[in-house]
Every structure is written in structure tokens, then in C-alpha cells.
Length: 384
Image (cartoon, rainbow, N blue to C red):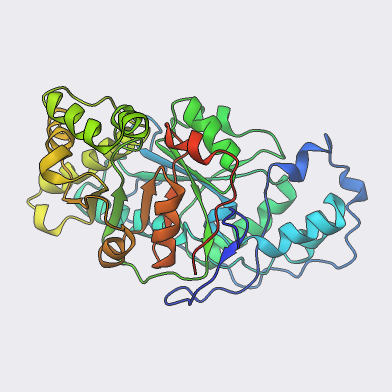
């Protein structure tokens, strides 16, 4: 069984009881048709009126943070919600039937996808921040990004209200690339099921990762956001990994010892860790370091004594704190991540993403660095 953003990995659901319902917003859904003829949608069933509208109360009076002050997280509808069924309608029956299906089912909410617990945790942090800083707009700002046509927007809004999410910013591109909009939003992190668009975002300097749908999901904290990062080619550049790939482990250790006082260059997700740290310090300033609702982890295959000091010195020189650092010296990451129970784990190697997913961790692939050349255009089997 191959691991693909629109395929499902096997396992047992432990927390999210999700059904097979889903929407599709893949890039291919709209590129073959430049215009959607609204008169030809051909709705045969009149949509049922919405009978219940949930009212959401937002404390503090700051509803829409300014992009320049917020930590903006852009999330694809395909990873926030389950999207398999509607995507199958498009692939089998075409765009017009897909639109008709979406409109006829627009009062049926989508079920949670892999990014859902992460987004809920962001909103929990926002609630704490509003309690401490009622007038501040230094908050997480969530933008829903979708390739879908605006017709599908009603179903997405109904779903967001059903799940009591606070997402007011939408970007529905009708098949066009969202990358330009991400830059306009000053996006700090982009999560998508479309690996090509993730690579495009990374090439534009936007932190991004590909998420996958898994049936095995570990229960995660509802009160503390936990984010775990790999080191090389994620927080740091792939400089050291290139040495390892080209010359082996002994040369890698020698290189790290010789350069332990030379800072590593930044990787694609360094800025997101920095943004998390900025919000953490707002809690520290109120004496809540030990009760901070954000916790960060470094989970790296590096060994501590032989190559860990350079990574730690680099983080310190950047002014970044990491709450916990695990140097595994090549041991599997899955069991450690199972204990951490992060809302999301970022890694540049699919081998580690798969291993984490097998243990129930929501893992996201960062397609950056030398490791991608070794895995280019390969369908990697999921170990069962």
C-alpha cells in the first residue's frame, strides 16, 4: 500500500471517530476547465435550509488580527476535513456532477481531517492569549485555503460552524495556485495535501508541509499545543545531511566536531518555531512558563555527544528555546513521538513520516533538502 496524500493508511481510530465523508479540492479538479458555467450546474435537489446556526462567542474583542502581527497558519480544506468521497465523485463523474453533489450535500458537515486537532489546539492557545492580552492581535490566525469553486464555500462554512471553529478568512481559488495569496497573507505555515504546491510554497520562502490522512490517530491534548520538529532540513539547513549522504557517518561526525562553533544555516521551518517562541514569551511574561499552552520538541536522529552540541548552540544563538530535545542516535522516532503525542510532527524524510504515522502521530512531510533526491518520485510502501 503506497502512502499518498489522498490515500488512507490502515490502523485503529483511537480518538477521532471520523466517517468516510469528505470534500475534494485537488489541483486537477479545476485546471482542465477554465470557467464554471453556473447555469449548467443542474441542481436536481433543492438544498435543505439550515435550521440550526451555532453562535460563537469570542472573548476579548479582537476578532480579526492584522496579518503583520498574527501567526498565520493556512490550511487546505483537504487536510482540515476528510475529502475522499467528493474527490471520488469528481474523478469518476467530472466537475459538473462534483459541483452538483457538493451543493446537494451542503448541509452535511465534513468530518475532521488530520489537521483538525492541530487547528483546535491553535484556537485553545488563542483563548488563553485573549484572557491575558484582551487588546492584542498577536494571535494565531487561521486561513482556509481551497482549490474549490465558490459554490462549495457554503458547505465549508456550514462545516466550520458545525464544529465551532473560528475561521473567518477563506481563500477559494477555483483551481488557481494559492501561493500568491499565501504571500499576501504573510503566511507563517502552509499545510496541504498537494505535495507540488507545498514544494512551490517552500521555493517562495513559505514554511510548508504535506499532510496525510491516517485512520490511526493518537489522542492529543486539548489544552496544550505540542509541535515537534526534526532538525536537519527542517529547522536547520541540509548542510550536515549532505555530508552524511556523500561521505558516511564517520565523516559526518568529524565535520560536526570541526564546526561545532559554526552556526548551522536556517531551514524551512525555523521561522515557524520562531513564531511559536514569540507567543510562548507572552505567557512567560505573565509568569506562566510552567503553565504555557505551547510546547515544542526537537526530535532528531543526531547523537547528542557526537553531533548534538552544534544544533543546540545554533538554537541558542538564534535566541530560540526548545522545550524538549531528543537526540535518538538513529533509533526509530515513532515510539518517542507516541509518548510526546504532538499535534503535528515535521520531518524531511518519508521514512520517519511513515514510522510516526504507524504509531498514530500526525506527521507532515517537508520536501526540502538532499533527502528528496534519494526519494524523488518514489511510492514508498507503508510497513504494516
